Image (cartoon, rainbow, N blue to C red; front, side):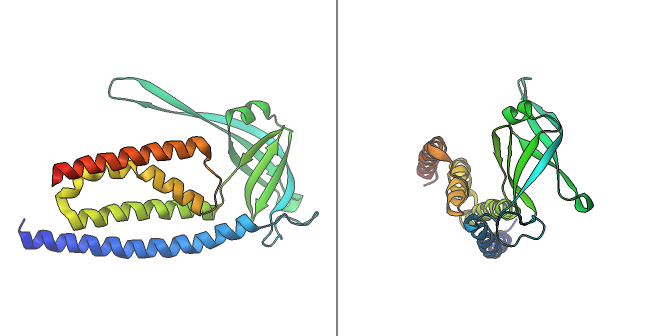
Length: 226
């Protein structure tokens, strides 16, 4: 491939990445407004029906009707098999004419405690269950705007990497390991800036360690490159 063709492809990649970053910034801003609105919302007055609630968090009572679990297993190159178990419960809520059932992911303790027929106290934001309490166990759920914000932030990070690759070409590859490690602290900081649930001392400790290792790897790789 000629030098001119390589330069054209790198400029094209850079243009696409920059355009993508502009779109990501716009979408994060839009969803971020919805996230901030939710985070500042008060509980609805008692008796407010969840389907007609405005910008307040509605409360309603549901019934646990079923529970389930599943396993996801992988096998590494050494033949070692590892499995992760996921738990969920099915709840029913709403008036008879617009009754609704929904599966919600839960942790193992909630799964083992919950039984069909148990009461579940819900908090609902714009039709989405954001909190469930049953048998003393509390589960918190992200809204669709929070999920979308995190998704766009991940895409922005990948596009930023593509922009750096377009700018520096093959020289960027030795820095890739450190760049990927910095993904975790980047998402944790973004998570905090969006006003989502705090990651706690352990989470921030991990972020600091990964940041240090990532920067060190990129610094060492930079010595190798230059």
